[in-house]
Image 1 (spheres, rainbow, N blue to C red):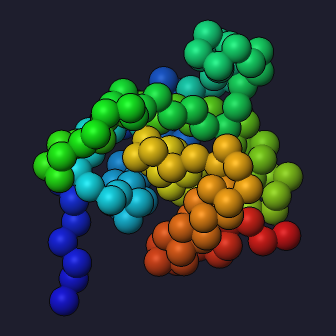
Image 2 (cartoon, helix red, strand yellow; image 1 turned 60 degrees about the vertical axis):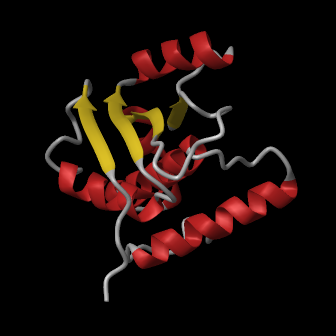
Image 3 (tube, rainbow, N blue to C red; image 1 turned 120 degrees about the vertical axis):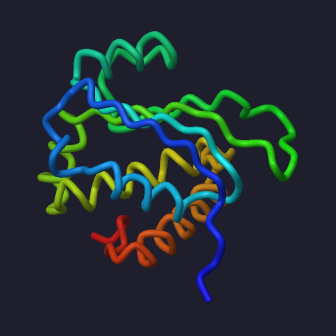
Length: 155
């Protein structure tokens, strides 16, 4: 018997269109659904390095493009069972393509991992200390395995 998926409203934006054919909305939907612990309203936006750097500088004070940024809009709120997590997840195509190549991964595999990572952040997971990082990484490994991908943290 298949487990019931959580309600999801997903918007996908390709401001940077380079991955639009390869990373389909159906794939993104599956990756997000597998990462959800409750209902969600999410936007996933693919951007180039310029936009990624501007967002990272404006919101995190870091003047470089990073692979994934999560803007969790109800992060500090106590959500009821039916209240959706609301977040924007921004993926920088330039960084994720470079990292995939450096790590010997496919772009799809690395994108799936960054989506899982971003969705977990949207739901309050973090890696601010060693215990939290280990717990989050193990959960990411478990989700990636269900999705049919290898351990994203393996060397």
